[in-house]
Image (cartoon, rainbow, N blue to C red; front, side, top):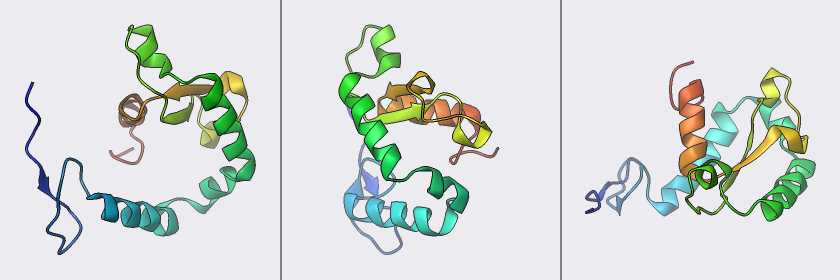
Length: 119
């Protein structure tokens, strides 16, 4: 199946073409801006150094996306997802985590109305 044509980067004044919303350079800038100005400070406190260690060890133990694997598709893990969000009383416990690819992670959050859609 042919790929979609590239589109201009959404960052103001950037002429680069990209497959996503922003080019590589501006995706980092936009992520940093989101972290600094839009993300809830309480959420930022929940994801410290301890979370990074937990996330890395879980990803090492689960190198493939668990949702894709159930369908018989081998996709590498790119995100570690909390099944019960921390904002709703979830924890970093391994029973509450799931290894996902970016597509599955985005789909789950879109279905719950997080970040990309209205809540």
